[in-house]
Length: 461
Length: 46
Image (tube, rainbow over all chains, first blue to last red; front, side, top):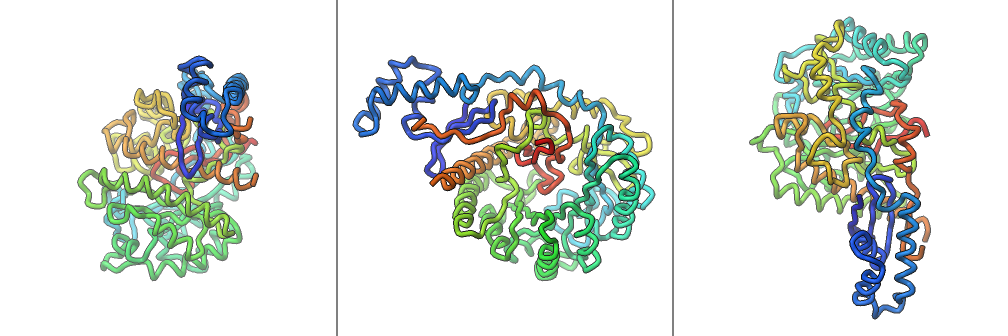
């Protein structure tokens, strides 16, 4: 399966199943688009009619290019047949019931009152609660016990606001470090925080122990303060930005992300991304809001079109800043063409409900943080393990090939069939497809690949 | 190939033979938390 598109002055041909990316001129672009449906003589006639008046185009040239296309096909870099479908359903079975990542909801409470919060101000539509050390410790033991031969185990301290339970977070990290070696494991911790409670202790401890910190900032002050307010209605921007700056500056190159959400209020979200970059933050992530239908923050069909244009604006500006020697990273444009994930990962996806689960403050297991509070999506608990095995099998069955809507989609090996939670919230079933999400996802991948093509062209100049 | 520039990429078909160690990061754990993109994950086995 091929995907051909033009962006940023580049003609790009993507061979979906091999993962090959080609940057071609107009003639080759049209030859490739005709290649499977016409013979060589027909292609030559069509190309001569279209480009015959150009100095660099002759019948001989066109036949040479057709030969190049044929050669790439033989090398498995063009028109690669899709042979993955039969194995798609079996890949996750190979991992058995291994769990390798947990999202620990250490605090179902929050010191901010953001109206768009998918976790309903941290409560997940339930009661406010803090995870005890005992529950957290058992969750870590559960992870070790169920991780099989996996060495790298990920734990995200999440909420609500995890810094509202900071002492337990620190105790849990110390406990994990005390037992990881004897079990042959390596814990990688992430802290996701709104920043209000960041102090020197948080910074010092996190810089030592957290592989990654995710800092919530929505960009411009007026955008951030519209929704990210405290219970008195005061915006949080002025309180958190100096703390985030101090945190990031002291991180010494360790991973972090400034993570924002954009809503109907700012479909021109690139201004917020650039605002963060202009403040000196270089690792940026900005996500479309996830909220209930009818929520005023929700994105409209018109917003979706604006956002698609904005993704292009973002890619071009990133390339420009890169050339000027002041690059920044955008999470969804990080596409490593040579060192990226294998086909197993590409087909299997995020692992929600199988190798990745969320743990509530009282020890219940859910397929991921976005399902917490949906009673029918409870998988079990950290003492008894997964008891709703039928539900786990439903998640195991989700992959790049499991949805009929994805059958002919060129992007399926980049999104793995999409986010189960998005699908559930949009269609009522995890086997569904969240179509606006697909549109945005495809645009992001087109932009990300265009950036790699542009970088390659700049390198070879 | 004057008209075609092929970028260096990881061959997906080849990775079917030796991939699947499962050590890579859980996709949406790292930053986004609200979508499923796997292509930006780093392989731990390369």
